[in-house]
Image (cartoon, rainbow, N blue to C red; front, top):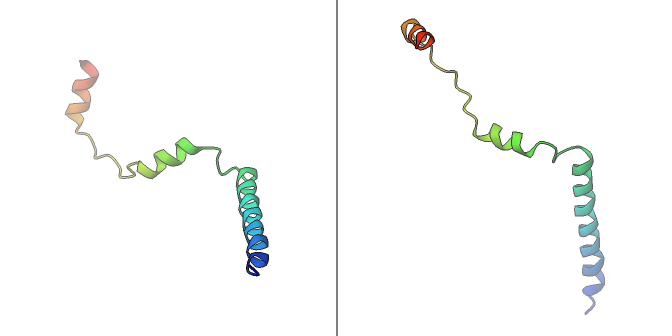
Length: 62
C-alpha cells in the first residue's frame, strides 16, 4: 500500500510530460503537412532514364 504514494505522483508526472511533449509538437508544426511526409516516404528518388530522340518526336506529332 505504501508504494501507491510513489506510483500516483509518478503516473501524474509522466502524464504531464506526455501532454507537454504533445503540446510542444503542435506548437512547432509537426502535424502541418501529413500528406507530404507520407509521399516523401514512398517517393522514387531515382532519375528517369533519358528518352531517345525518335520517341520524343513521334509523341509530339501524334
